[in-house]
Every structure is written in C-alpha cells, then in structure tokens.
Image 1 (cartoon, rainbow, N blue to C red):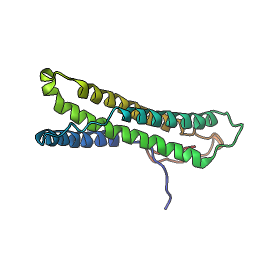
Image 2: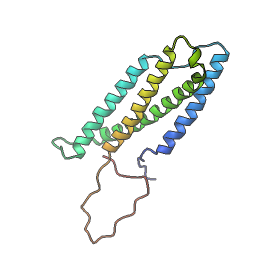
Image 3: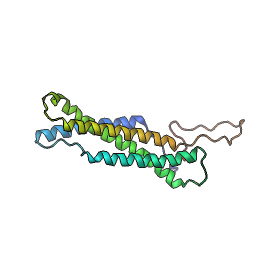
Image 4: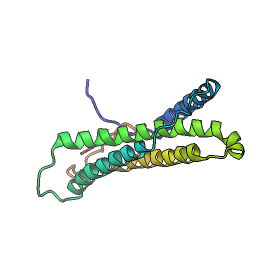
Amino acid sequence: MKSTLRTIRPAWLAVVALVSGAVGWVATVLANRASLATPVLPWSSLLTMGVIVVLTVSLGMRVRAWRNGDRKRMLNPILAARTLVLAQACAYAGALLFGWHTGIFADQIPTLGMRGNLDIVWQNLALIGGSIVMVATGLIVERFCKLPPEDSEPKDAAPKPKPAGEGEYA
C-alpha cells in the first residue's frame, strides 16, 4: 500500500466550517439558556494563531526557496513533509475556528441592537478574521511545497496519467 499526501480539498474545508458552525451555534444557544458565558476563545488565542501562521510561512518559505532553485544546501525531506502537514493542519484548524465563531456570531446578530457592550462581538469578529488568515496561509504554503513537473522524460514518451487532485510535493 503506497501512502501519498493529497492536496487540501476546499469542499472538506467547507464541510468542516459548516459542521463546526452548527456546533458553535448550538453551543451558544445552550450556554445562553444556562446563563453561561458565550463560548468564544480569549483574545490571547489571536497571538497563538499569529505564531502558527508565522511559523508555517517561515518553514514554507524555506521549502519554496529550495523549490525555486536556491539549492545551496540540501533540503531535508522530513522538514518538507512536516511543512506540508503543518500547512494542511493550519488550513483545517482555521476552517474549524472560522465555523465555530461564525456560528456564535450568527446567534449574536439578533441581539446586536440591544447590546450596550459589543466587546464579545468584536472579539468574535477578530477571531473569524484570524481563522481566515490561517486558512489562506495553509493553502498558500501547501502550494509552496508542490514540485513542478520534471522535464526528464523524452518528448516522444506517452505521459503517465495522474489521479485527479494529486501532485508531487517537495
């Protein structure tokens, strides 16, 4: 059995966001009925999201530089694979957080006019923005890890068919 890494499927990101959005909305409704606090992540989670994004981009830039011809040093293949996995995890985590906080925001919309304090709404919107950045970072860094097709095959040879959605990674 050959194990290969696959590209991120946008449909799966959408499914993750929709399911977590529904769960976030239900959790908010239940928390409000029980007079509990709205289940929003704290402001400090934006710092954590930022650190993850910066780490993912910095590792992705190393792989991209090697892929584009800056091959002074050999690229560790384990580092390249870990960078790809980190990028994919970043995208999926961003989709999860996006859905969760969008579900919470959907529950908060009817009460916006009655609220005197909109801090929780701004916090929620900031986390939605941070999660969008995580998804975008994951998708971009995943592309950094993709190798261009090799030109080593003779031009007369028939090209080998590749399964849809699969490519070769650094």
